[in-house]
Image (cartoon, rainbow, N blue to C red; front, side, top):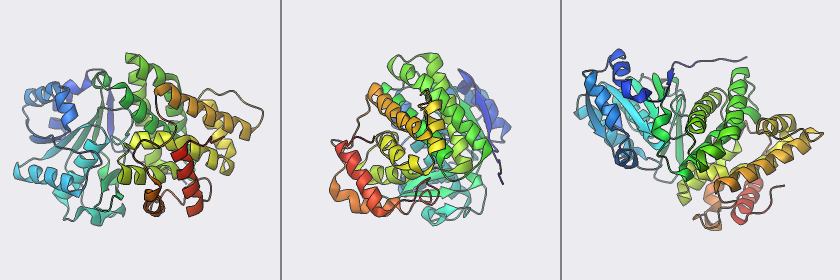
Length: 384
């Protein structure tokens, strides 16, 4: 039994962000809270967007202080600006942190606090204000998802899931990614690949999610290298589209062990989320593939790997292809040097098993298994 519920309108075109004002006016907005981060502001990406709001007769208030891995305080500050300024709609412009902050601020605008009391699934009682999202990376997928992730005081990345968190509008403008540094194209692109791969291989069977995930993996395999090393405009556009497809996929079928393990890596060691996923991905693929070899063989072929004569051999070749991809993109093959230490392992393992993705991982996993995977990813032991 499968359900597809996607109450988000997706607009894709170069330059499309310059007309978002008309969209927000159509959503009934008059005064819009624009949620973003200092990097987006410094890159000048807001100029055309704010101009579009003015041309549509809307006023705007900018909250530009989003921090990486936003916490409850960051979301509360944004919600305070929304209330104090009399806003009636929200526009997020940026990567995952800005979008998560905007969603959390919208939640607090229409629901009583504290924010982290809504941890889990379907605990948000009231709809958010109209929310539009313009992603400026090719990894989060949050412009179409039903989740926000907020870091608590103990470094735990707290997931809040609700259909009310799905934006009303996602504007995909690849022109906004042309100044994205290569290392961020690489790491956010690998985040999108991880979304698609985990959605496709976990225990949840969903026909629509599988179709979106396969297409996303094919597009990323074809595009991530030229998008990173050459800033090729068509490749960047395909990466943005693939990221959204992967976001649709995991909204419908969720994720797996990579994300369960990567969130603690980010929470305790400060490793950016996409980079943490990219480093962990081949290690977890090698561990998981015996739990669903046919799916991992299909993943390998979506990445361009020829059939190797059996599902398990094809799946192993897929792991090696992901290792090559990381190497070509300049992504390290281990956590050594990125701030991760063995002393963090007990806390990281504990938080790994707080994730709702553990029960749907394609292979049963124990604390000892996770400890071995963290050790391998720290030292760079060959996955296959």
